[in-house]
Length: 186
Image (cartoon, rainbow, N blue to C red; front, side, top):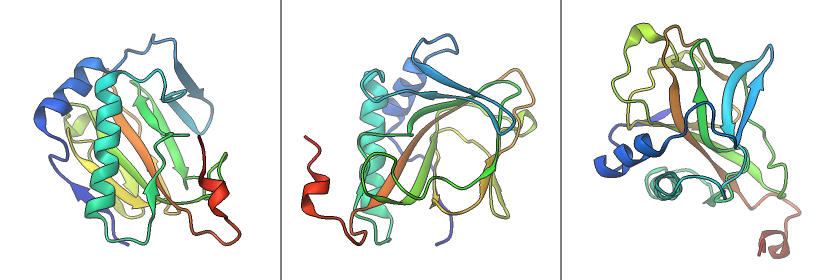
């Protein structure tokens, strides 16, 4: 599957509400990744997400389910390993593949989707995502969808700016050996 880029993915009012509610670096519920492979922040769980961000993530899930012709079954609405991400000034994410298997449920991850919440991004600020040979800017209200097993990275943010994004997974529940009981999470 080729990388899918959807400009103006969310209604403008919702996109602006996400920006208004996006936490700063001192938010106490961030998990900070700081090692040789990354300098980034990620939300710890979906319960503490601001309301506009919850709505946006569910809306993005609907877009993925409706617009992507791919044999995927549903979006992981628990957002394990997904949710809000922020690459701060000087931050980066080295080349990697997203996890092939969901860490809690017996699901295979199919698609990764990143929606950008950074208005007015300038090319010289860095922070671009490289997926294989493609390099894309973190343009505001753009959704980028790619297969989770593709190698990708976020290039360093070179200015005193931050890349804000929402991230979600699409998973395939038809992995051999799964039963309906595996999907009853309530």
